[in-house]
Image 1 (cartoon, rainbow, N blue to C red):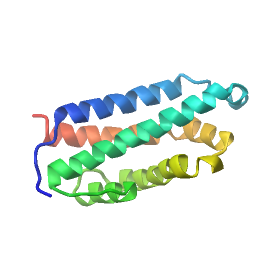
Image 2: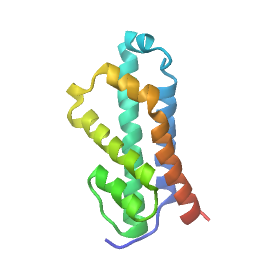
Image 3: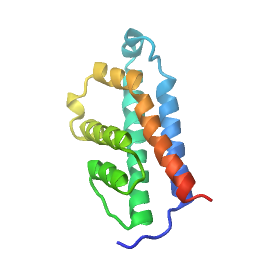
Amino acid sequence: MVPDRIDPHVVATRMAWVQRMVAEIRALPLADKAEFLADSRNVWTAESCLRRALEALFDLGRHILAKGFGVGASEYKEIARQLHAHGVIGAEEAHLMERMAGYRNRLVHFYHDVTEEELYEICAQHLDDVEQVAAALREWVKEHVIS
């Protein structure tokens, strides 16, 4: 694979998608677990939006690697490792991304094992992790792509 040009449109649309999905989750009643769990639509919204936010982050990471460095990475955990190896994100963000990759895989492949309570806890306690990784990617793009 040969490095090419990171597409600002891809960056912008994936970042907007992450922001929109996180905002949708934050609009849910996350301050009260009982209220969150009382309406199953909250659970389905949280699951869908979280999965989509994570997929958008990893799609952006894959795009940065492919176009910016000529590196192909198909597995989500490998995307996190390669972004760190190429100096796009720090060790803390790489660790968070690896954890997010595992959780995204659980949402997609082991959805039947993800409990409503676990989903609530992730959304109520760890959305900042998604935003931290998004901010790190945004900052790298700002410094290296958009001049």
